[in-house]
Image 1 (cartoon, helix red, strand yellow):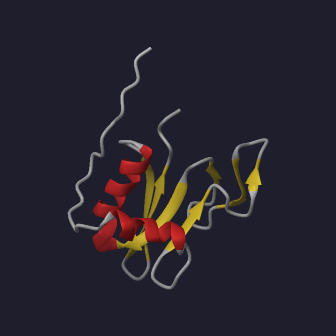
Image 2 (cartoon, one colour):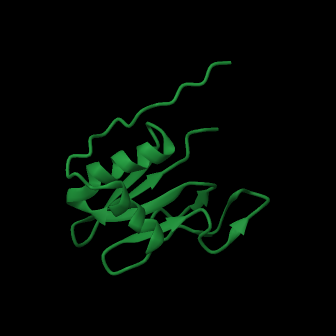
Image 3 (cartoon, one colour):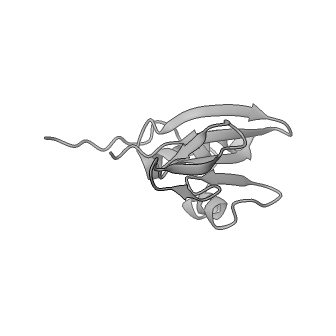
Length: 111
């Protein structure tokens, strides 16, 4: 068996730092950002998913996955950091939102 780590497919074009991206996890629901992870509404041990549905994509969030909402001009950089943490190709869904924001679903790729 051979494992291969996929590098990010996006560029960090707005120079968002790792710390700036990690602030979405530290302060997940502020006026400027939102983030919903696999523990949204509690964790369902039997199904390895969130107990509540993601308010954006209307599905339960898989273990280690998350939905992050960022300003549209930060989308490419946010997708870069999603792939940096989860592995290349981790962005499974995106949705344009009001107020020039975008939602991004990133799924853990190291299974």
